[in-house]
Length: 246
Length: 74
Image 1 (spheres, rainbow over the protein chains, first blue to last red):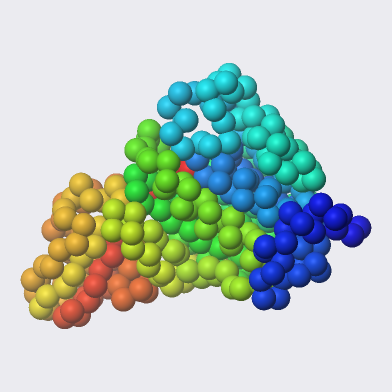
Image 2: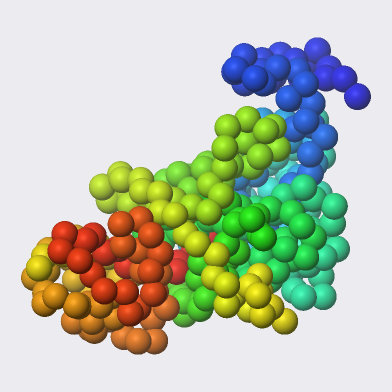
């Protein structure tokens, strides 16, 4: 399926980039991404993938926006309070780019539902707010043989990594234990930074342009606006991807 | 010997974001964690010179140690 005249104009500025062009744009159009969470990180991730012309975007969130979400969850506004976040995301994303096929899933991501929710996606983008679901997505990505882009935030701090086990450490290698659940402090620009980096990792992977954060944890300290990249090894004893996995 | 310790995100409550510490030869990463009174219950990612190390890793003069606790926010 060729790109329409409108699409050629819409994506013109990115197609001007070295190695991009019409063929690469077509790769994006043929891609499917599963975004877990339509909150702080899910907002910039889904918005930038939508305007970049991803073909199919599957977005999942069981929650609905409340006032305390609106400093950062830019998919939603006060008129969407009470609307499911995935449904609200679909409305926003369809307005931004109607040529993208957005599927909204309003259920919880559980052991029973995760395989069907992820479906035949080429990539999982982890925009969750809790580690049990992040671990579940990690295991699903490994089982399905697809990469997962991890991102998390706290205050003016954030982390990103591109997980493609067995070539890279998995999330459980990086963080064997979950932090306690909490209502975390955050300013909206923080998920803006980290979510944009996750979207960029996805675009690079799907187009084959540039390289990904494979085996690296990128850490952003927003207080100082300092980025550092740390090499992180696989854990041979990892219960999920190590030698003695269950 | 002198080392530099950096604390990330939620760990900043246990000391300055960056501090220089004078410690004895043979000091391990676990020793530093104890000195900072970071509870054992907090899961940690320990990085020295951009490499992930285990708690028993012995530090050398001039080493930068970065301590991270996983953050869940999204």
